Length: 285
Ligand SMILES: NC(=O)c1ccc[n+]([C@@H]2O[C@H](COP(=O)([O-])OP(=O)(O)OC[C@H]3O[C@@H](n4cnc5c(N)ncnc54)[C@H](OP(=O)(O)O)[C@@H]3O)[C@@H](O)[C@H]2O)c1
Image 1 (tube, rainbow, N blue to C red):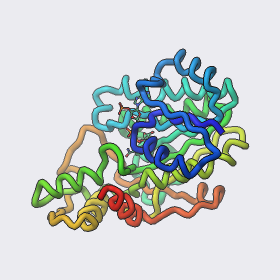
Image 2 (image 1 turned 180 degrees about the vertical axis):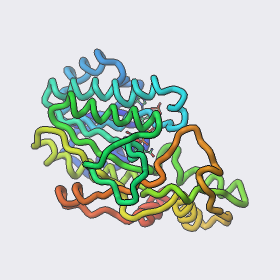
Image 3 (image 1 turned 180 degrees about the horizontal axis):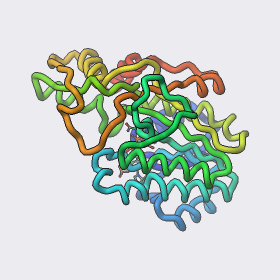
Image 4 (image 1 turned 90 degrees about the horizontal axis):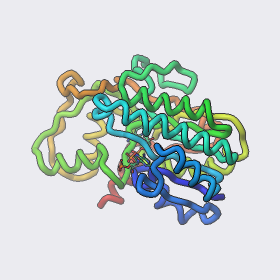
């Protein structure tokens, strides 16, 4: 099976690279913006024509959530227009597209874990562009899997785990919000699930939508405390309210996913969030 991984120098893309050797039946092609700028429609078409991937895992995205508030045009180009390019080219050659979306498509006003049929209502520019990307897959792909995930971190790139370790070393104390609740997701766990479901997803037609995060629930404060505790750094973490730490982009205050659909359909067991934080931190050491 020939698998094209776009945006492969990001957190998720790199975690797929790490796992690749455990999947000898898969033939991976890795690209990032330098090899294949997915916003360039004709380059995408030519690349697909020349390489004939059977599966596209789209890890490329504009993920600067706050910056997107003042640059929604660029965020839309990468998170929506480029996804339309991939979906159209995939459909032309009968390929499956696996596309990653976000909990930020929800407004966070629920208190019951979100399932796939719940109404979306993004509050941020990033969330709007990611929802438009989902819609591009629904509209233009013939075979697709949309995986919504949340609070992604990994051994690669910049993320909350690495930021907490850095600040924990530099400072005596840290204030972290406790009124936003969700679930941290280890990109390595997400990468494994993607690679596990690909063979059967490839045999289906139509578009499937799934929610995937690690198990359990946490606030950013709980997440920070866990990282600091596992790191052995001495740093006092104080809980604060979102309004005490204003950022350009509004975040959902509740974005826990109901993951029953993916667990039942693909018979997967999802690791508990803090076990995966521990795994990631062991790798970072
Ligand atoms: N990070 C999170 O907390 C989070 C939460 C929920 C969902 N997600 C979703 O999960 C997916 C993976 O996220 P991630 O954290 O792994 O992202 P990431 O680390 O930001 O990686 C994205 C990659 O895409 C590349 N890229 C940007 N524009 C491109 C273009 N035009 N053509 C090709 N590649 C391009 C980026 O390059 P540059 O670095 O040079 O821009 C980067 O290497 C994304 O769809 C994201 O929206 C992320």
